[in-house]
Structure formats: C-alpha cells, structure tokens
Length: 94
Image (cartoon, rainbow, N blue to C red):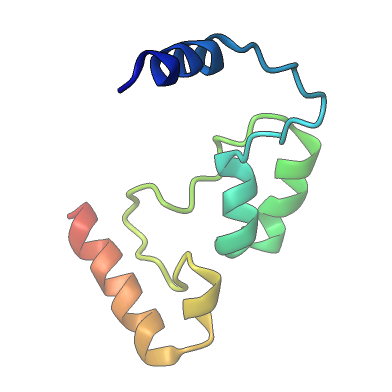
C-alpha cells in the first residue's frame, strides 16, 4: 500500500455516516411464526388475542395427546408430509 492509499483508507474508515431514520424494523420470531406456521385452533385463538399471555397455548409442547396437524403451513395440505411431520415431532419429544 502506498502512503496515499493508506491515508485514504484511514480517512474512509474514520468517516462518520449520518444516522438514517429509515431503519428497518427488526423481524421477530412472532412475525416469523405468522408467516410460516399454521394458526392455533379457533378455540384458543380468542384467548390468545384477548390476553397478552401467549404462553398458555403451546402447540409445540410435549403432551400425552399427539399432534394431529403439522405446525408448518406448507405441509398441512400434503397428507404424506403432514403424517411424516407429526410422527417426527412425536419421535423427537419422546
């Protein structure tokens, strides 16, 4: 590196960029779940919307009752994949 290139490099690295007000809002796991996971059953949907405590309805938690539908939206409509997804979920939790 020549001295001129070095000085230019230092000058560029010390440049302070103005703060932008157009920052993107962070993508949350909740938003991700709305995009890729099926919604909870209707009987729990009203409870979720009314209360802020969303931890009570855990479709993914281990229960004695196995999953009847997969969690991913795109797998729900494919019967073979849906059955494989439910069985895989059960195998992981046992």
